[in-house]
Length: 294
Image (cartoon, rainbow, N blue to C red; front, side, top):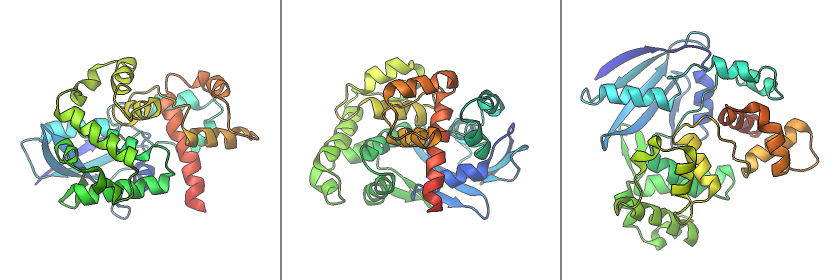
């Protein structure tokens, strides 16, 4: 086993990162030891890393542990992007200090956008989460992964596209997928293994090119494509106006009698660019915290 220590520029609140990760029952989070297990594919090989925070918000540092020396450097580079260690958050925090979101950003200061661990699982999760409340979306995703995926070193890996493409709709219906959602997940997997969709090239494409590519696939609309851009690729300026969570957060923030219109959301968000993705994350966190307190 290898061990590596990384120093990151603050502010970075890993405890709040763990708090949000823990909403997903598939995440192996240990609050006492401030650790999370991270399942990754490096050159198509599954590996599991443990990330442990040993610093504080202003001087964050981490201990990374893994087994395979072969993929160590590539795995660490992937972790830096997954946990947003590659770019300091101070500029983001400063940008929102004089905005309508200043109190939310102060409450959640140092919360980073944490990416899904691989592109395929991100897309599958987005499809599963479509038009479901968050609690049942997590439950359904957990059933899918624990039924058809696999566990390694205590961490759960989503089933591969090859595995999912071989599933029958009835197998997914048995764990409470709708017939349509089952078709979408199987169809996406078939597109990948048949070579019609290459997720590995997405990082090189513009936001619009990614959108144009994904929405051609049955079951992927604008909301799913935007969430992939945000939580798959880590693009900084995404604001999914169709997202009910963001709409509810804005309704509470501005004391609106009803959810804001698309035009109102556009008006509110103009000054939040070029960090709209962080505005989205912190608005989500503002209502997630309310749910946790109930």
